[in-house]
Length: 275
Length: 219
Image 1 (cartoon, each protein chain N blue to C red):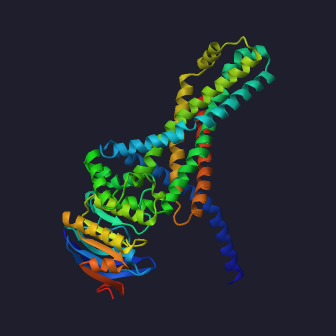
Image 2 (cartoon, chains in turn red, purple; image 1 turned 135 degrees about the vertical axis):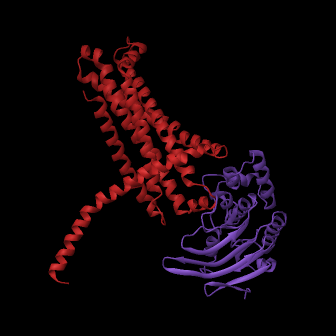
Image 3 (cartoon, each protein chain N blue to C red; image 1 turned 180 degrees about the horizontal axis):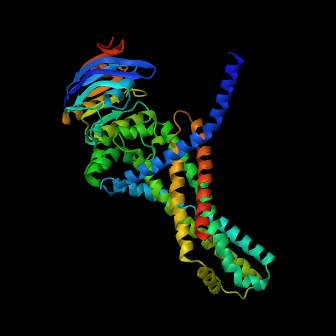
């Protein structure tokens, strides 16, 4: 091979390497959009009387695993963050400023931003990785082929319950997180000033939470939950022949979920809260 | 409900496995295909069931070509017994056996349960096995649960892939008897790939795989 040809090959290799990332990213997102559409199409089978009980059982199991059993970890992290935040506010702000502003600060920092972000991260770490691993194992064990052989759409059994359970779970996790944060923040205040009572503290925070905050958090939870669920299944389903594919799928899935979820949160916060 | 296979050709991207198979199996017949290791026995059954890509020809059952996107009412009544695995790990044994009926039929929960118990009893499945998850079963139990799930739908066609592994001759005889009884009650063509003389002895016809086709006779 002449040196000119070698140089051409080298250049093509570099162009190919540069182009590969956007090409793969585009293809992944195209697949994910396709899966959302497949999940919505398969969702109409929920209304078939013979299939509804199967969906309902799987949905309940998924919701319990993802949304209910997350109480402990969400509560613990919410407790640490609520206490830490209030302790830092006490350290940095004069008491007069704090007594009028703590509710606003709490809502801006915890309810608007930290609650959705940390709940999403917990959902990704605790449940989405488990779903990716489960789907990867099912693929390697050829269980999708078994289901096809019985005329059963695997999307209905595996994707649809996750597609609905993840957003609801994320809503629940947000509620636990905010509630425990409020409790632990109060505990810190009460420790510093035992005359403070809980109800005025709570009502001053609730007064700061507008319908806008509730709406944006609901949108973050619903879109975020759906995205996390679909991405976890997309990467799990890419595993084919070996168990090594599953570890790679979990790694790629987690990276994509984190990027997608953070991006979604930033965009929605900017759109909703920029004056 | 005769199964009529004509000019069946199964090809993978890098290999041609079967070329031009013609076979007819009556609803009361059991056909055994002698299948050695890696000679394509599993591909034959999966090809007939319509599970594979790259299959040409015709597999007619009730006038419907199984290779041409048959309706769901037909797909779920093709009983396929896998040599290994084949169960859905999401569900326990009882739910696995009931799954195709629960998903596709209009039977009540009680009617489905009665069918599951009736078929399961014949293969020695009991309450403790019904509660097990697929990973808790041994190979023989897994195949028996596969068989129970295939029979519970009263299949139009039964395809069984190497049932005998790990079974004693007596146990295998009893299992074949159960399939035969079921066939008498609910006629269906049966094709089994096997290396077992017990099955050859009980089959109506025996074939072997030779030159990418089926040749009558086990030897």
